[in-house]
Image 1 (cartoon, helix red, strand yellow):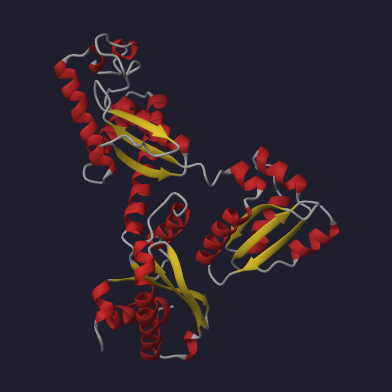
Image 2 (cartoon, rainbow, N blue to C red):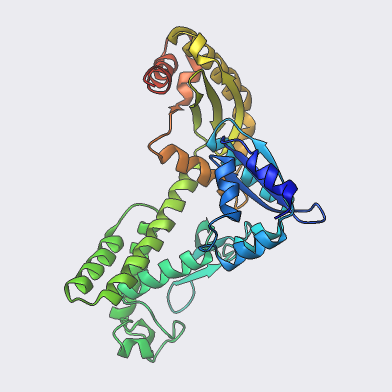
Length: 367
């Protein structure tokens, strides 16, 4: 590692931010985020025996780096996402293609509905589409697990009158043979899968859990591990659907994140878009002052942005930002308030002020 780079890494602060790795020509080849910049960047160069081959290859080409500080870890996540999409660094694409999204489509094709996985949503009339999902392998593993557990893992899905090989192995109920009872049973399973993906029924998850536990009781740990992996993949799909539903609702979100003992970062979000952020000197303000300042900012920002943000559709290019915000809100360390639209219409001491006062109490005064 060049001496200049050693000095630069050693001088990095222990604060949140984004680092941009460069090659010998000055091109940005990798962008990453960190809660503590120095520790994260040092991990690339020291005690690196556990690194993957791709990371080891990246390190060989690093000759310089830049960094951008943020006040909070959430902002570092969002800035990393933005920079990857703008710069498209070579090693970010190698390690994880940010544009490789997959969709699950349920299409009405003779002789019965089919489950399809693709990089683009199906355009078949009357079809149902779920996604986008950021991991093709996770989608494929989840669908395979669902099909296997529900005995619809047909090896001849377009057949009308002959049962497939998987039927003889006990993995397919035989709808490929054309029997009315088997087709009706298959269609009922498809309806259950739709309910699962839409968050209305979790019987399939319970079935996967039962198969895993049964295998463990038989000491068949290989099969138990297989269904454990299936379960993890299905849970990942369900969380992604929750992300899309939550973000598509264009909720108004007030985030109040501690920066240090003297200040907090106020972040206002609509859907998956950060609309406003500012640093508040919370130590120098009392509860009433803080509540009033935050309420005034929320009313102004959410009112002025309501038209543009409300018309913005969820697309696969928004899913990364949506995932970051959703994961933050679900974390135990988050401090936020969801603001119903009606709170923004009222004047005086209303639900907005009361909600912000509780947020200030939990984020600022209870520290």
